[in-house]
Length: 339
Ligand code: CO
Ligand code: CO
Image (cartoon, rainbow, N blue to C red; front, side, top):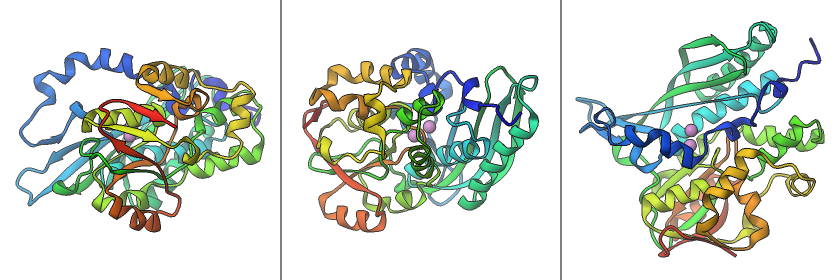
């Protein structure tokens, strides 16, 4: 059973298995206006396409729950690394809101007839190691028998309500900063095809297992933040621009890419989810055609995209050394200029 390839059980690569943004709004259509999704104590709900829900704790002096759930199919063959990536990714939505994770519920779907259970326990080991490292307590979970393996967590965190950082709030003139390089979708697709050199894969795994804890705890003066995952850099940027009613200009040369991504993309590796991302944003992006596929690539456990006032940028980059300026916020509402 040594030769089992987890990604051969997966139709999509990590967050690239998400429903597209257009499909998602079709599915969520009725829920957004349903009484079930509104409440006086709800600080952040479905309305702003945010990373996590924020709900003010009743009777508590200004603290709120931050809640999110994230799970996906295997992005990588190594079960331990898949578990680590899924846990890092699930925690990210709490960090992206400026929160700190408290507890997690594990979600596991396993094809029990086709895949040995000891592989599942390696996945669980990976997830547990990351949760322990993040100081997040795994309090329970749910496991089912399915045809395609799935793994992830529902995570609950805390935030001071007034410090919650959402997609809304980016202002014209803000600087956009990105904390991790792009390209995990392209690399995972090459890996699934057995065509990714090990050192390139290792770089992507290092990035996908790096917690956004430091990037999140430095958000103090941020106007807006989100993590870059399944909808890609452009998709999550546009969610922020729409929620903030602004536009952006991106300096494509300054957008960091993982080692090896450009070559693998040139060799034809590109996830279906990234293709859907590109189609969904195409008519709202102007300029530099050839860079768009890379900017639309579906990310798994990507970095934070942060809108900061100019005066706070140097301090943020000093505290989060992996971060880079990638653009500015403009008044061209809902439009991304790529130069
Ligand atoms: Co997110
Ligand atoms: Co998410």
